[in-house]
Length: 118
Picture 1 (tube, helix red, strand yellow):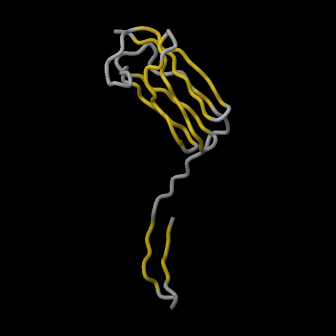
Picture 2 (cartoon, one colour):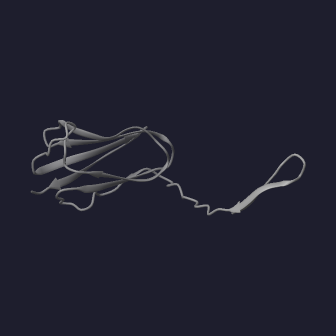
């Protein structure tokens, strides 16, 4: 994009060029498979939001206990990636096993399974 700033006397007071990147917005909610899966020591969780909103992305163990919250708050529409380093909310390494990641945004709710190997 080329731009030019003109004052009230029609005098040019600045101009330049800039690159404008247009980011597409998803048309529907999605929670993707984490990768890699199985993983050690980190994994990436991708999700799509078609609109701004409050998002909760929570990790649970096989007993249904909350391990940590990766996202908990306002998130703009778009394509998102979050890394989990296999640590709980206290920063401690969790043990190998099956974990679930649960995404909630508005009425959209989805849970997926992942495996941590050690």
